[in-house]
Picture (cartoon, rainbow, N blue to C red):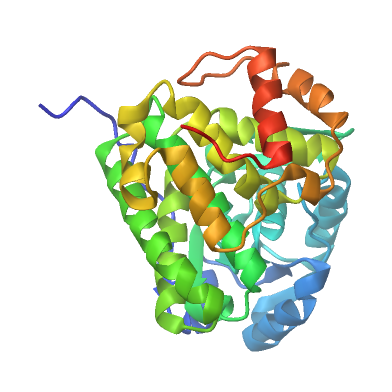
Length: 353
């Protein structure tokens, strides 16, 4: 018998395909806006300026100051720029940093968002905002945070560097992994996550040797959409908590940190709920944590927190921060459990479960 569940539905409009960047102007107009501020990181400013030129009078300017982990001081500057520009909505072009800035502006001003992801990180389909202030990252959920429109253009991912392709995809897989055992999971999200596992497993090895393979890029971007939708529909647990701790308190790179943690957090919880993670072991090999570690090795992803700049003495403080606020996880844990998990990820040991 199918278990009881609640599916809250999806409110974000999704435009997916090749060359869909050309539809952004129509999407801005469909929302009832005539002026949009384009957001990006400094690294993607040229792309943002090109989009602004394409939008013509719809563009109210470019703010290219988005930063990793959404620092609140950057948001304050961006909100001031948004208000001064005369814009009535924002268009976020880029990865998680830019998407986060658009969300931070939206939740403070009530503006609409059009998001154009260029990585697989996955925050675009969610009502989640993580912000950093005073050396700590805090996360909140609010319907006002969820973007109104997401435009996926496969062409924008053709030049995504191979290393970032792999870590960004593993970041997305982490969303699906936690969705499989979430207490508020439902059959729709589970089916999307299973599809995503298969698509990433097929596409990433191809992209490792042929990064401009459009078919593989389309598969990977589709998988990223599935995982992002999962992140926005159900609760996350230990994995995301640890990633936020390491990112917000130690300045660790976002997708790389997710990629390194993924096999270890999967293995930790698989010991308690192996039946809920069979979709991962079926695709990547059993046991689930070891299968993901083997796959990460195969695609050349980082395996050690030590290689990302974390220092071993930081592990104690990270474990303390991770236990500051109570949160649900399918397997109960102690500080020693967290410390041991972080040590394994620091050293890059292959999980046994």
